[in-house]
Amino acid sequence: MAERLEGTIERINGSIIIGKFKEEPKMGDLIEVGNLRLMGEIVRLSKETAFIQCYESTAGLKPGEPVIDIGTPLVAELGPGLMGQIIDGVARSETELWDLTGPFISRGANIPPLNREKVWKFEATAKKGDKVTAGDIIGTVQETDTFVHKIMIPPNHEGTIKSIKTGEYTVEDTVGVLETADGNVDLKMMQVWPVRVGRPIKERLELSQPLITGQRVIDTFFPCAKGGASAIPGGFGTGKTVTLQQIAKWSDADIIVYIGCGERGNEMADVVEQFPEIEDPKTGKKLIERTIIIANVSNMAVSAREASIYMGITIGEYFRDQGFDVSLMADSTSRWAEALRDISGRLEEIPAEAGFPAYLADRIANIYERAGKVMVPATQDREGSLTILGAVSPPGGDYSEPVTTTTLRFIGTFWALDSQLAYRRHFPAINWLRSFSRYLDVAARWWSELDSSWEPTRALALRILEEAAEIEETARIIGEKALPDDQRLVLLVAEMLREGFLVQSAFHDIDRFCSPEKQVKLMKIFTDFYNTVRPLIEQGIPIDQVRELNVIREIMRLKERDGTDPIDAARAQMLNEIDALTKQYQGVET
Ligand SMILES: Nc1ncnc2c1ncn2[C@@H]1O[C@H](COP(=O)(O)OP(=O)(O)OP(=O)(O)O)[C@@H](O)[C@H]1O
Ligand SMILES: [Mg+2]
Image 1: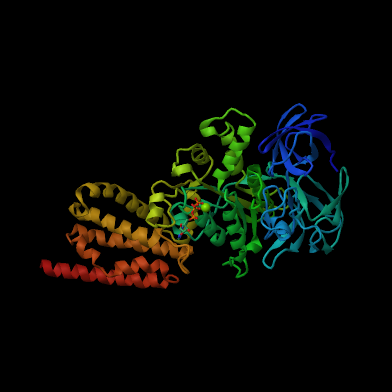
Image 2: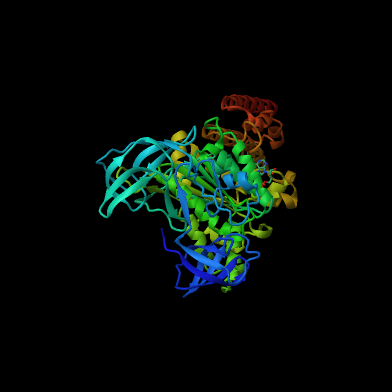
């Protein structure tokens, strides 16, 4: 048990408590604050005087009440029982607190995230006499119907297994004993790790696979990589939450960590109530069986929100270490940054841009740098990845504000949500001219194996969309009809691509997920249409006649048709109709 150092409250400034200790306490240590024993953390230290960020409402606290340094930093509890849990940012089980007290948890209530009584069936896979090192898997637990939890030797341990036994245990029971250079260590299913420190890795690996989300504008145009980092900025109501939830539901990640850093309690309550109901398209069971939610649904202080991101990332890293592809969503990092600003203000630090502390960039970097594909420290090579996707909510949708611009420096994919598009109900409202992906090489390798023409097709589709944007500028001045026909063709195909490819409803039974096979085939029919019609336009067939082709409407509806057979049928129809038009026109000519 760590040593407990005592002190008293000197001053209270909102969520910041200034406490005076008998000796100098440790930066980052957890503190029990006041008679209610609220949770807090030392965020600044000046000898014996500590500035404590209190995670709960400090109303009613008085100078003179005790503060106790419990001698450990904020840690995440890691082990069986996490799956399906709703945990708050400072590692209390909201699931169980809710059952006890309802959504508004009484202050000072504290329930650890991992159930201490629950018995799990531990299947030992290591044997007596095995030489093991940190990260080595010593056994498994069937945690949910669909998820097998791997129990690992905790970081910074190595030795020889002295004993280990299959059986029924709680997370705190000893399942085996490890003989190390410094003596025997009891092996348990639960381990802890300080949330603000990244878990050790053996090696960072190059990203090699796209994260397939089933969302066309993302996968085809602005792909993310497994182990990559992505930002999704957007003003109020532009679709940040729906997009992140689509990725949570449909992406090919094994494990989902969903962090709700919301301002509004009811928004969080929605997440907490809806998520457990969502069916997992992969397994037919509930998505929650491979999801962990971090949400401050209780009436906790903003400062708990600041910690919640690190809690989520640490849990994500833990599953990454088991060899899984983990996707972490944070909605929204702006609320997290505001919490940081609030704390910094109360610490009376000198503010930088827009009132954010000067270390905002370092903190944002710390978050996204923990994404990656890694070789886990273990005797046998094992890879895992953690992908981080952060929503950003710039005030007034202004992307020049510090959180958005700073985030841009540390991410590989930028999905720029656009209020204009959202207003026109073009969803996902990802602006194809302002978004980008630095993982295109990774994606291109993968997609080209599926279809060798992927790269040129994608490039052409994007060029049509970009050219159309320029032509539209002119069209606004002189009118569309006054444009030359080749330009009007670009406008026509761009419109077809927008409606028939980019727009994708999260609520349509078929369209909500588009398989990679369907994405390529679908994209190709637009570019093939363009490539086939273009020579005809050059030969003088009027664009207005092309616009009359019946197949155009069919092409735009293909996304809502099941599978890829209708695409093949539409292609045949397209060639027939174009052929007929050519003949008809040549007939008129001669
Ligand atoms: N892919 C989509 N398909 C269909 N509708 C969508 C899609 N994305 C967003 N919408 C529509 O936009 C609305 C707002 O989306 P959402 O709640 O995700 O926005 P937000 O950016 O998270 O907003 P806030 O700033 O309030 O958090 C949704 O309720 C839905 O009607
Ligand atoms: Mg939202």
